[in-house]
Image (cartoon, rainbow, N blue to C red):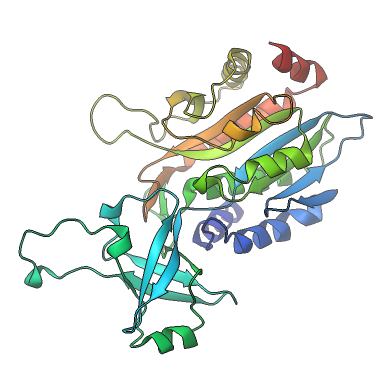
Length: 354
């Protein structure tokens, strides 16, 4: 991994970006990509996209869409003792949260660390059930409600895990929010690689907001761009740590996501993906998911948009920590580059009609 890619992933995964509070991620994308873009577009919900314009007249539009947000929490109340009540924003299992370190982002972008309280073993009876999120409390070290307010923390502020990006082995890394700072990383990587290359289509790369709470940002951006072809870049849960029914194995390549609860990959698109990957020696694996991506909204927008998800697997997503394999990232990036190089008007029309 190059130092630049390492630093990009570190910065993106450590940024605070809960659904509806993606501003720090958006600012970073604008900083990195606006100097390379012919135009910067932002929809009314907060998604941001960067245009690389073709010199070809009446060029078709190709969209590569990530999402900025990560699963997180929102402050709902502050107790008289200075403890913070919160609710989840996105899908969280309650059993992974106790004793975990978190960060609160205030409206003026200050960040405060805290820990979700747990009952020490000394005081347990053995009959305790796993607390529900609505009953948990975040402790930021304050003694009173007034002290919390003086820190600048208010109801409505967002909370995400406090995790540093870390290399574990030669190919595997630990972080938070690889879902979906993977997507934010790949759009930066590709756009920088394409800066001096002419394309036969207008390329829009960017990221939506609020994917983790119902794919809410995908509709506004699809309506704004009106693409002829779309690629969604998103991270999916690996299920490869136990048993033989593995689905999404670390180190075995980019995911060919054939079905999820929001989208079925068109057979013509699947065949093109496979042919392109095989011709370019891109490691890949089939993937099915009970979840969904922004592709679920984009592919049904307007009159229907041919859409595929270019994904990677990661372990333990939608929790405080994620482990991913950088080889899967390389496969996804190189595979998407190969697909872009093979994209032209004829290919787009074929995918629309078949």
